[in-house]
Image (tube, rainbow, N blue to C red; front, side, top):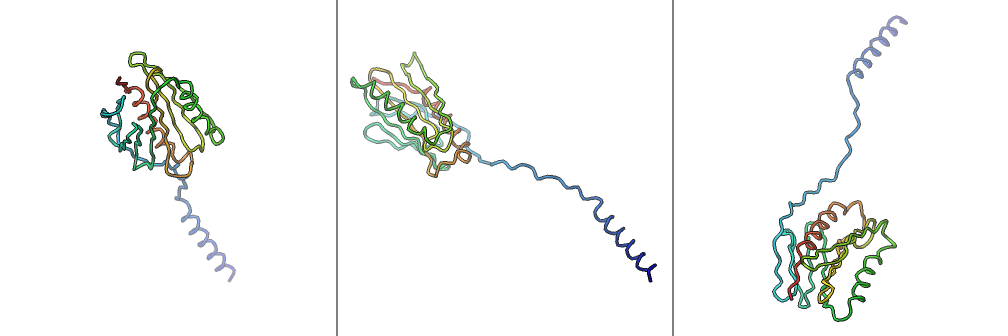
Amino acid sequence: MYDSLKLLFIIGLCLMLAKCGNDNVLPKPSGQLALDYPEANYVQLDTKDCPFSFQVNEFARVLSKRDCSMKIEYPQMEATLYLTYRPVKDNLRELLIDGQKLSYDHNQKADVIKDFPFANELDRTYGMMYEIEGNAASNAQFYVTDSLNHFLTASLYFYSQPNYDSILPAADYVKKDMIKMLESLRWQN
């Protein structure tokens, strides 16, 4: 009887060892968020009644207001870029303070606020772009002026609770559009 139990034990052990021998356990590959945004194709946005024009991404939807302010919507990303135009009338200092204050109001939630000066002597455009890292309400802003007649600000907002890691790809996409706006901005007097 012991001999038959030994034989059964040896056969069972051999079967288990044979079964476990060829399985290679590999770790799962790290996952990447797959967000596919269309390649940016820029067209000139000529604002007939406003004293400026610039290039805008065809992917975006532009909604204008009477006072030359506008909303540039990115429906697929659930984001909007708000542009506000103000004429300069001996109030450039106040407009500059407001433009800078707007970015630094996000200081409580921001991890880092990077500022990038912008100057285009040929087209008389001077300003500053801000990239705001962290869970702030706005992730990018700029102001630009000709220092004499015109002042334009822009702020990017998403329609969700701020979560910097989740919106980073979309924010980077729109930041490139904002840089293109700054570079292509032309004042009309």
